[in-house]
Length: 186
Ligand code: GLN
Image 1 (cartoon, rainbow, N blue to C red):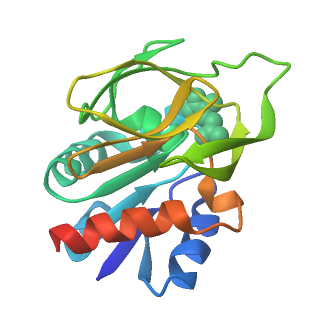
Image 2: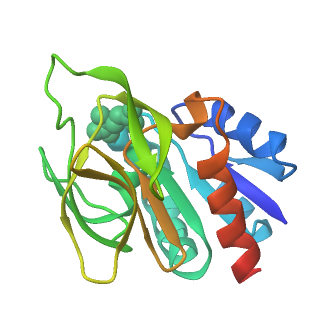
């Protein structure tokens, strides 16, 4: 089982470390053709508009095909890229997760913070950095983590997304959940 981490911009190396700690074989994906050799993909946090630019047209189209066929996990900017609808400002997405997501939704006071949330009702540390918020969750989307009343991680079929950064905490449960998803569809 080989997991790709999209490595155009953002904190891809932290994802690589977490996944390797869990025994996964990881490749950093920089070229569209590398998508053909992986069983699952992580799209890291960073700046979603920059990642879009760096993908270019060909990269975007190849990625669109990939996320429809194989398990993908997006964190923060990655979650924004997976969404059907993006606000603040509007932005195109891969359209594979039936949610409306609002970029930079916590305002300046809470630009970044570490809070405790719940993953499948168990407490877990969550690192938020200029985080987006899910504003609408489609009927086919399951909420797997919450912070206060907010849904902060979701799953729809083979697609998982989190508005926080599990790769920046030492806890590996969220990455393990993604690897379980990849194994189940392997
Ligand atoms: N604010 C970023 C965006 O809108 C996301 C921040 C992050 O990935 N930590 O793309």
